Length: 357
Image (cartoon, rainbow, N blue to C red; front, side):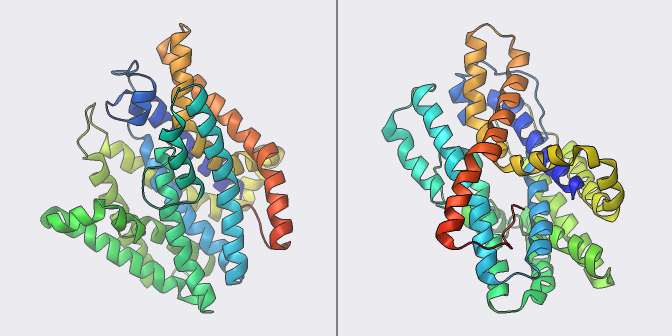
């Protein structure tokens, strides 16, 4: 679905704009340190971080769509092949940049590199953006369990439980500091308490659009949407040493993305027909979203620092760095990742049902 690939790319671009325009100027952030704070006070895209919440909705939708008629082993293999090669390549590129351009000592980054390559769910990582991978894998684990039990049909119930649990906790959090603390803890993220509502939203959208729009599903979809709004409100309220984040804009962007996802599926034949001439480019953009997300932050910050040192106007450094990150992501997708995938498929046994989704 071309519309889905475009939405993925848009979400990754939003996160990139956030990190390389706003977050790079926030004291204490990794990118602030890499650029020595020279971009402090620069205007930025304050709401772009919500692209991560958009990713979680898309993930819930895509995994439900792609796992329906797949066995547990094939599902696990496909997820491994989708996640690991690009993560290993991108972490290696980040390692090289940190050692060479950023002047980091090997002892400082090699451990974080290994933790990133082997998907250790707790920090530190080679780049802070790797935090989402543990959350994604936790979600995949639940879907794998359903497939292993031969009960994929229970995904409806799983979505309802995630929506009810996560949203209830977010409703209670303002009145219960212990619950709020748990939602902000890494264990809360890995147990899908923090972002379960967003994965549930994606699953329920798939059920409503591809199966039946039952009243119960619509009610739980509304509940999941409420949970997502509450999570975004909370995230935007975090006190940081910089301009406050715009919660209202972030909520509008997230709800707008959910609406675009729905429209792109409902009118997918029309969208695909409109974009026929760009099908290959859009597919590349969709596949390149994951490596773009992994390389844009630290590598982008190093590029920004070097550009500024060369005398480039500060306002141009971020867009140029993001464009270079897009080119790197394209190179990973077109040339670096395919040989690794072919080797791994050979070692693991070729499975034609494995797709890069």
